[in-house]
Each structure stands twice: as structure tokens, then as C-alpha cells.
Amino acid sequence: MTTHKVGYLIGSLAKDSINRRLAKALVRFAPPELEMSEISFKDLPLYSYDYDADYPPAGKAFKAAIAAVDAVLFITPEYNRSIPGGLKNAIDWASRPYGTNSFTRKPSAVIGTSPGAIGTAVAQQNLRSVLSFCNSPHMSAPEAYIQFKPGLITDEGEVTNDTTADFLSKFMQDFRVFISRIHSALPKDA
Ligand SMILES: Cc1cc2nc3c(=O)[nH]c(=O)nc-3n(C[C@H](O)[C@H](O)[C@H](O)COP(=O)(O)O)c2cc1C
Image 1 (spheres, protein in one colour):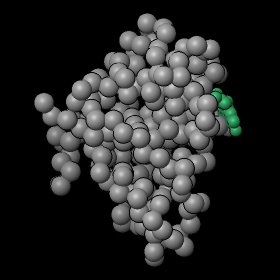
Image 2: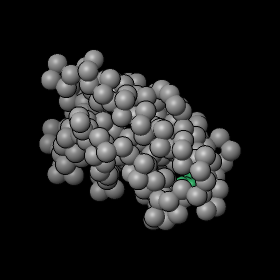
Image 3: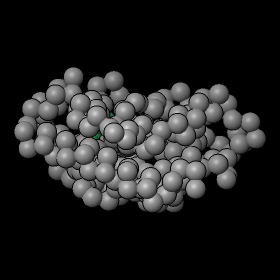
């Protein structure tokens, strides 16, 4: 069995984040071939290229965490029709200094939940644009726009709706296949 390390970033810093609940559900549904671990970005300062000459420990640790995984899963809310600033700041840290972009050839997937009917669709499109520029091959299907209704996912990550549970399980299985395909086509040491 080939295993893949997946680092997941939760776009929300809120303690009662519904996207953190979604992340817990996705960890539950991850097939055994995927080793899931959270990569936190909450300690990163606001990025400036002034840091490039001497990255602070938090920046180095964040880049190292991205480098250590085989794939990245973004689980993000939509803030003002885009991704939260904290998540964009984290991506900027990992993408620099110039020539050391941590996302190059790193497979990724995007998912998110919001109470709104379009379930983070616009934020995800924004994020896909960023990932394209960062040269991260991202899974284009299935798209996953999860409308959060009260009680849909418990604090422990239990999904109470069978259709949503099946969909999230399939999403993680598809991500496993996508990661394998990308690593076959674009070996890490190539
Ligand atoms: C600053 C801000 C902007 C928001 N903008 C959007 C938005 O553009 N689209 C949307 O569906 N929900 C929006 N919301 C509502 C969020 O979907 C809702 O707060 C959700 O709980 C955020 O996910 P989280 O709990 O994981 O942080 C916004 C919330 C905040 C705090």
C-alpha cells in the first residue's frame, strides 16, 4: 500500500469554525493510504519580502511543513467572496523567497463550507487561481461546495446527513487517486 502524507490547512482561525468541523469529518473519511496532519499558519506574521533575506522561525517551519507532505488539502471559508486574509498570507509565505516556492508540483485539493447557498464557490475559484500561479496541480473534480446547515457536522466531525457523508468520503478517495496520479507523472525528485 502506497501511503501519502497530506497536510491540511484550515482557512479559518475562529475557535468555533465550521470549516474545522469539516476538516475533522474529512480526516475521518480519509482512506488509510492518506496520513492526515494539520499545518497551522496562525503564528505567521504578515508577509513582506523584507523577510526574504532571513526568514523568521515561523516562516521556516511553515515552509518545512509544506515541504514534508506529499499533498495539501485546503479547507476554507469564504470571506467577502475570497479566501480569508490569513490563508492568503500563509500561501505567500510558502511561495517565497523567489525560487523556493514550496507548492511547485505539490498536488492539492480545495473544499469549503459556508451557510450560504453557494458554499464557498467564489472563494474556491480565487484559491484555484492562486494555486495555478503557484504551480500546484489541483484536483478539478469533484468540486465540493458544502452548504452548512445547523447540525450537519458535529464538533467531533460526525456528519449527520448520509448523502453528504458519502460525498465527502468519495471526495477523499478521489483525492488519493489524484495524488497518486500526479506523483506518477511528476515525481518529487524530477
Ligand atoms: C469577514 C467575513 C466575511 C464573510 N463573507 C462571506 C462570503 O463572502 N460568503 C459566504 O458564504 N459567507 C461569508 N461569511 C460568512 C461565513 O461563511 C461564516 O461566518 C462561516 O462560519 C465562516 O466559516 P468558519 O466558521 O469556518 O470561519 C463571512 C464571514 C465573515 C466573518
